[in-house]
Image (cartoon, rainbow, N blue to C red; front, side, top):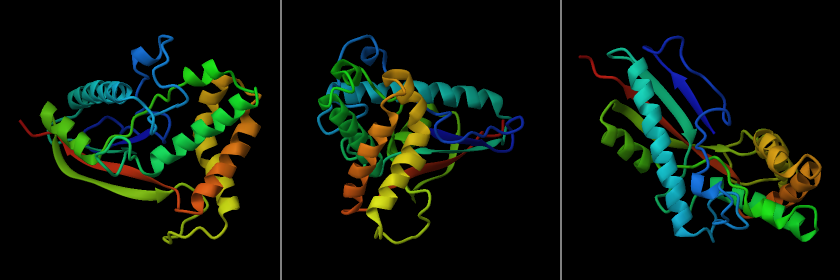
Length: 237
């Protein structure tokens, strides 16, 4: 779930929307039939520390490879700008709104398990191919590889509801906004993964339940997602 925008020095530039590039493959230990993160599709409040570490290590491996390949493509003095979903805090179990949405989607799936519409084993074996790093994590990895210079790195937040462009933290219609977040934001990204793992039949009921849970969440705070932006430059030699 990342957008990579290539600047000067990359042939033709490299652009892609959220959800197509920048995803982190599910760690092998979580995709070999062993259920280490039961009832969660991502890192949740009850996720074991060992699973958190697996996601971290997988991201580090993939990001290191990405930097190495992009370094080879860039000419001296070439630049690129990366934007990808992140998290606001260093604490792994405090992902802010990014984590909250995936946790709510896990709960919506759990509700379908209770109704007999989803097999428990299917939920237990489902893990998002995704990891949300912090700014400090990204900075440390880039500096460790010592391939590219950081010209700028920062984080901004954007509303989850694609129809809400207000700067206010108050949601006036939680039910409507909950449906927007569920169907126009999360479903737009997750539907292919849901169909592949759980089948198409559960889609409408799943996102109906999820939208209701999001609406309840919006009564306490607006749903936003943190985005990390980093500008990199290859030194002249």
